[in-house]
Length: 290
Image 1 (cartoon, helix red, strand yellow):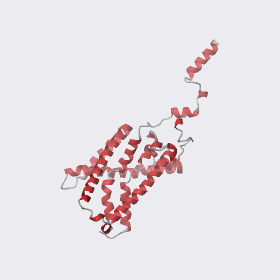
Image 2 (spheres, one colour):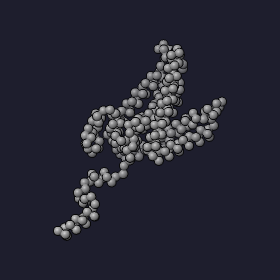
Image 3 (cartoon, one colour):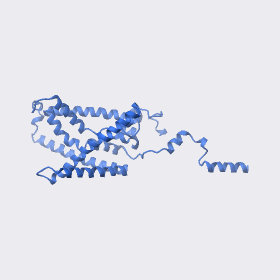
C-alpha cells in the first residue's frame, strides 16, 4: 500500500491536475492557445461602425456628389441608392462575422474561401495601397479643418498639413497598439463629437427650411440641371457617395475581440435567429455550452 501511495504521489507531481491521458485534446488546445482579449461590447462595437462611417467623408463628399450629379434631386437619389447598397453589404458582413468568427475582415474571408495565395494578395494590396491612401485622405482633411481658422485669408501651407496629419496618424497608431480599451474610448469620444457636429448641421438645415429656404427641394425645381448630364460624372457622384459611407465593414476586423459577436450581429434577438453555426458545430441557441 505504501508503494502504491508513493507511486500515486509521484504521478501527481509529474502531471499536476491529472494524467496526460485524462486531458482531452479540446481542453488542451483551447486552454493553451493565444487569443485576443474580448473587451469590445455592443456600445463600443456600434461606436466603431458609426465612428468609421461618420468620418471626414461625410463632410467632404456632399460637395462632390452635388457637383457631379448636376441637380439636387439626382443627388438625393444618389445618396439613397448608395445608402441601400451599404446597408446590404453591412448585413452580409454581419452574417460573415458570425459564420467565420475571425479577426482580419476581408483577409480572413478571402483566405478561408479562396486559399492562402488569394488572401495574401488581398492583404498585400490593402496594406500597401488601399488603407494608407484612405487614412492619408482622412488625416489631411482633418488637418485642413484644424488649420483653416488660423489662415482665414489663404490656404494652409502644405508642409503644416502634412506634419499635423503625420502626428495624428502616429498618435492614433500608438493608442491602438497600446490598449484596445483606450482605443475604444477614444473612438467613442470622437464618435460623439462627430455626431454632435452632424446634429448641428441638421438643425441649421431644418431652421433654414422653416425660414422658407427650400426652393431646390420643391419637385418642380429639384431636377433642374445646372450642368449638362454626363454618365461619367454621375458615376463619379456614386463613387463620392460610397466614400462617405465607407467604414461599414470595419467591425469585422476585430471580431475576435467582441464580447458576444452574435449579440452584436443581432442585438435584442435570440442568437439562433442569426441562422449561422460557428465552426466546430454546436447550436447558437445553446448558451450553456459557451
